[in-house]
Every structure is written in structure tokens, then in C-alpha cells.
Image (cartoon, rainbow, N blue to C red; front, side):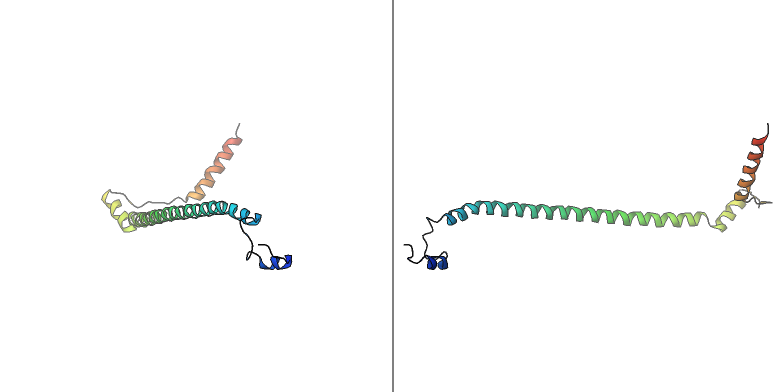
Length: 126
């Protein structure tokens, strides 16, 4: 039953109205499936993000493990190089194979410059 006073009907809002005849109520009922679908899509999106986050975390854990293994290999390799370059070990090997101390030592950067000058002078000859 509609109110005699239209202002009072505006103030009441949903109270006292016949909701079955109201177009606004019909439109709001039509929005419910859209809202449910929107919530499902949002939920699936959040679930996909969580799965992707877990995948990235596993990848990060694998990368950290691989880094740890590689750092250990690097540490062992450096220790091996230090052991192979040890002067006392090299002296023992030289003595075992009958190598003598050098009579003179050639400085390689200076030798390269000398060789380059010799090549330049040879290039000027006819």
C-alpha cells in the first residue's frame, strides 16, 4: 500500500515499499549473479597468484642451494690452486725433476715492447 505522502515514502527507503514491483529491486537482483561471478574470478585470481608465489619461492630455494654448492666448489678450487702454487711444493718438484734455478729472468712486459719495436723496424725495411 503506497503512502499518501510522497516525501514520507522517500524517507522510508526500503521500508514499507512493495519490493516485487520496484524496478530498483529487480535490477539489484540481476546484479547478484554478476557479483558472484566477479567474486569467483577474484578468488581464482588470488589462488593463481598464491600458486605462482609458491612456484617462485621453490625456484628461489633451488637457486640458493645451487649458489651454495657453487660457492663451496669455488672455495675448494681456490684452495687447490693455492696448494698447487705453493713455492715449497714447486721447489720440491723442480728438485725431483732435476731443474736448476734460472741464470737470468726476462721481464715479459718489457720483452713484449722490445719485440714490438723490432717488428716495427723490420717493417720499415725494403
